Length: 251
Image (cartoon, rainbow, N blue to C red; front, side, top):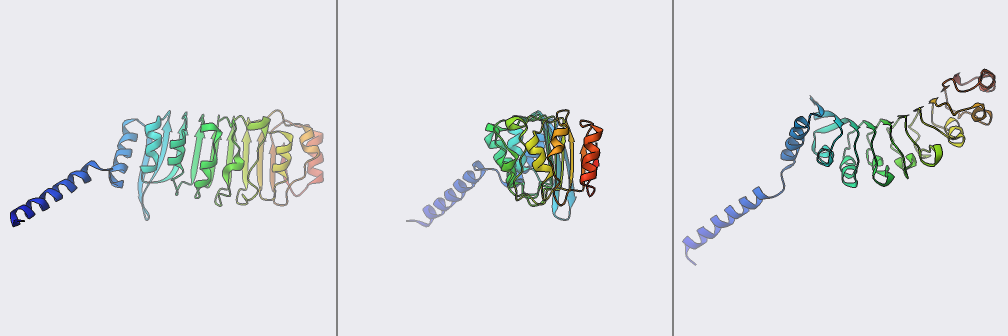
């Protein structure tokens, strides 16, 4: 084989490899730039800043489509994420499960695929979790796993599975503060939460909580504050305070 033919084969191989590389998947940097541009173009609130660990960001999504939800995982180091009015799919929750640095997640008026909340257990840096106007149909917060850093959960105007059944994993010992607003919690769940060994602060605001809820409830060893907004009688409230003076009880 002549030297000329060998040179031509090498050149063709190099050119072919270059074209294949160009036609291949975008680089992580290119994906990041595309995700940033997409959020800007669609008018979502994306805030970015430089820190010691690199570029970090916070994002607030309003009525996002599948494209925006899929692009979330390619943004810079995500610290806080708010999603309003989204229909989450299996693909979008798979992408969200990659947010290893996420410390705060807020879901407002969101639908979960087949009631699946198990994707949240992959958010191992999560510290605060907010649900508002969500329906937990076929889903349970018991799917959260341990989430060692989660210390605060707020549930507002939601519909729980099984007529007010609210259950957290027993190993979630870091969770200390739970606030439940305008969301029906059944008597069994109320008693389990108040008697939890790890919760220190509980707030309930729901007209269906009655004196009966308190009558057979004993606080857990670490409970410091319990607030039940204006749903129980003065006599029931004073009786609870007398029986459990170690708890700061507000009603």
